Image (tube, rainbow, N blue to C red; front, top):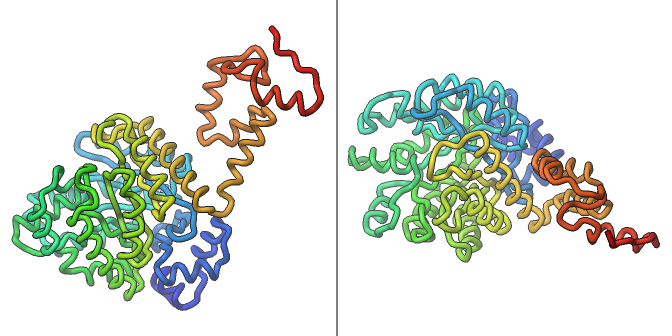
Length: 434
């Protein structure tokens, strides 16, 4: 092969089959997309060993993508149940599945995921290291951490979250600047513990070149994790978060020199008025690399409804530059999501992504809304159901409350505005009395 990664191919002027497919999906010129990939503004996560993948592009000028987190844990270790979630997530048009498994038969689940998923697959190798080595984190060596990364790459994972920006310098800043919620990133907290217990540098920062070599070999996109993302609106946009972001910008350039694709991960919890500035800052400090955000969750008071707090923040973030939204479910902060929790999280995240695509003038985004508006004007219920983001729910709501007149609903009945205007504008007789 004349190239090792999508970025290397793009730099050489080679239009790969993945670039062709993404250009087709996004309705943009292949050469325009190729230039965006070459300069790191767009990533196409596509591991050479993920044969089932239907590739997606993440980044500048493209539609906003959404990710679904799932995976087995000590308390919920049923692989079959998680695979049911995978199938449902793909049916519901999730663009990525992130396997956060941290216990038990993680390899079995990851193997089945790669063999099944047409969506891109992400992992957080440090989670898997905890279960794989089954010993105190202090005793895991840098080589062993990298060995887990290599195993995930061999298995076909398209992108990996690695918290490489949490170096000793950033740790010292964190220690000097008190936070209400400290470090809420699971991976970040584990690495912080390892660094403190061993009095050593973050192994993923110290051995970053070796990490890049693994990513280059398999064309794994490196999703540089936000170990110091704010876990409360009190901690957002503080010096800890920004210092790590600056380090991620430096690591981005080092990755691009080796033709490794990069995605930057971002906050977190954040009040609405800070979101736009954070998106601008990330794009500036990280040289226009694609931005992947969890939320942002815009208020801390709504456990059970954090799919809503997240969708509000996600829509604003994507409008101002975020390219990839990590879904949040109603179970956030409370438990492992059920299948129904996952469905609600996906719908909320897709609404946020689509709302942002309208604002960003993504090609074709408004067409869907215009079709729905036309169906509403024509009171074409079947068409409305077909176009609905959640067709099943829309049908069920209608069926649960049947109107007297089919050309109305039980909210308005005969005084439905659409019905009235259709009749008047068609010069038809209009009777509103019962």
